[in-house]
Image (cartoon, rainbow, N blue to C red; front, side):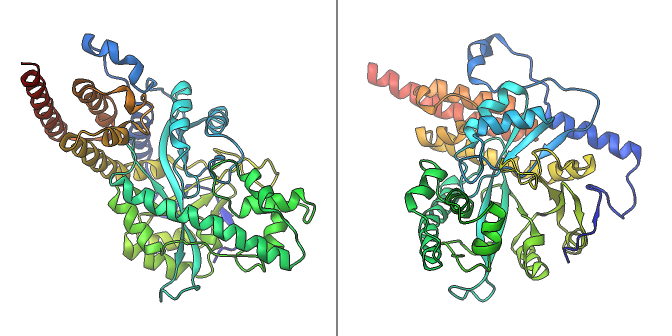
Length: 431
């Protein structure tokens, strides 16, 4: 498993797709990646500043997706805006920002992407632990990618609470790694690590490794991991990662698509994949910039998982790192991903909007606006304005994610009912 022999990305030994299949898949993916904006009405004119910039459908060529990337909100080197700019230069049309255990960089990425015609998939790479016997201190580290629709996760409080707990554990974990390094006569200061990580960023192994390089204890990050910080290294430490099965289930509950990241780094991939599939795992990474790792495509087939991949770009700048957009997934692979994801994302969006319709608080409005490239929720204080914004979301975003007309009407009716009640209460108060 995980031998060095590679095959070209996106290919399969199954019956080859016909040119007609490929053409249909390309049309399907293009229509989603580059939706044609609806014709603006006079009533919509004043709302133009609030709507995300969309690009017209384009013809010719494949559509390049990047499904695994990191910014400086976790252990990447580039800001979300700089990451988007680099992706744009490399021809990426759809970018998933999947920082470790945080979605804090998504709003900036969405704002930057709207200026260059890139579509953002809000994502996150969640640190977890595979521990079939749930024995304290045991288990194998596993990373689960989560992909969400335009409005982000539904029941977001549950997801954000888990991510916060993981990030809090990263601080303790980093301090434990420094203590172990100290015993090995590798003296790294905590202030050095937190300065590299940046303000508000939970420090990870990469930040510790960079501090080791700067302090002169190792020549590069790779050596720091190989000699000290790898999963079996003498300075490795665990954090407060949840069990992997629980992470997959949470992603499912919050309207996301789950994918196992870099399974070739696992010691026992078959057992882990089998267990996670039982918990609801949707996909697994199979494709890398250097090809498809032998054995993992077969594992995906064995357990009925969608095959995906990405560059895992961090922006370190070393010659051993794949650049963003270097994993060119086949159009039929992208079509399969979207056909699985869009109904799930649509249902999540409906839940978010219905929650606002039933409880139109600033917090719930904020959940709608957070990843949409719109203005801050504080700018929408009146009931009518909040209703209008949700209607804009329904007409511009959700129509591109297959939300049925009857569902859109259901949300509009609830919002209209609430708006009517509020106007009646306001008139009664004025009288």
